[in-house]
Each structure stands twice: as structure tokens, then as C-alpha cells.
Amino acid sequence: MKLKQLEGLLGDLQQFSNPKVELEQYPTGPHIASRMLFTAENSYGDISDKVVADFGCGCGTLSAAAALLDASYVMGFDIDPQSLETATLNAEELEVEIDFVQCDITNLELKGQIVDTAVMNPPFGTRKKGADMEFLSAAMKVASQAVYSLHKTSTREHIKRAALRDFNAKSAEVLCELQYDLPKLYKFHKRKEVDIAVDLWRFEPRQN
View 1: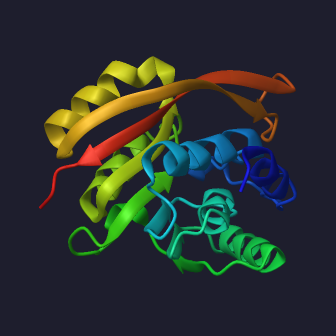
View 2 (view 1 turned 120 degrees about the horizontal axis):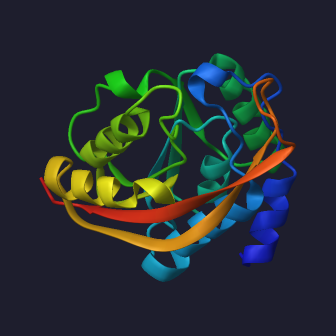
């Protein structure tokens, strides 16, 4: 599948109808989502025929992208049942198979490296300090091949240090810097839209 086609399909997906600020729910736009998964597949072969997990999947955009790029099995995990309802509708609309699981990522009781690849757009940790690191820690425990994640560029050194020192990463590489268009979703947002610089990371876990 070509990048343009993938972006077009993701652009038709439903997003949060009533986003929850405490969960830092922001949609992963089709521009970023398509490039994230397309890079994972075409540069590293980490999606097609792989078992892929989407942590904090929200409305299922990254999960859908993985399924469209021929992952053998896709799981989406999220704490919010409303988001998972939307994600299920999106998967049905695209006619792709994805298993969605309602759970708290920080209390995930999965044993060992049971997926090949984890993908995620975690909370940036602006409402709950350290939320981004909790997601990264959880993903690094269950992925055997790679973890792809978006983090604010301003946290780059902190992310790299923690991944290599604390989360068992063999490597931690910024693949590119992207502009995350943050729409005005909440009352405390002053401007209509804000661009935030984010890094697309690829982490390679050590084999257990």
C-alpha cells in the first residue's frame, strides 16, 4: 500500500467525540500515523506478518494502520471504553480485524515478549507527570522486535537515557522530527491550533 493511500484511509476515521483531558486524549492525525507505520514497515519490516500491539490506542488509528499494512495480528489497548467503541466502529468500517482490550496500561499483566512490535502515541505527561515513561516501560517489556513511539522533542535526552538505562533498550533512535498539530479540544486551550515538535522514536528491546 502506498503512503498516500494509507493516509487517505486513516483520514476518514472517526475520532474522539468527547475527549477526556485527564487521559490527555488527542487524536493521532492521519499524516503522522501513516508516516509512523509506513516507516516501520518499509524501512524496518516491523509490521507486515508481525504481531502488533497499540498501547493507548484511543480511536484505533495506529491499530488500523498496522492492520492495513498486513500485520498478522493487531491488538489495541486503552483504558477508555468510549474510545474503544469508536475504534471498533473504525475497524469495521475499514473491514480489518483488530482485537481491542480495555485495561490500564500501567497494570498490564502480560508475561514476556509476546508481541513483535509495539506502536503508540502515549500521553506526553503534561497532566500526569511521567505518564509517557509508564507507557514506554510497559511496551518495552512485551515487544521482542521494536517499539515505535511519539514523544515531545523537548524530552529527547531524558527519553534516550531512560530507555537505555532503565527500560532494557538495546538501541534508541530518533527516526525523524514531526510537527504534531494539536487542535483546540479543551476549554483551557487558548489558541485554535498549536504545533508541537515531536520525535518519532524506534526502540529495540534486548532479547529476554
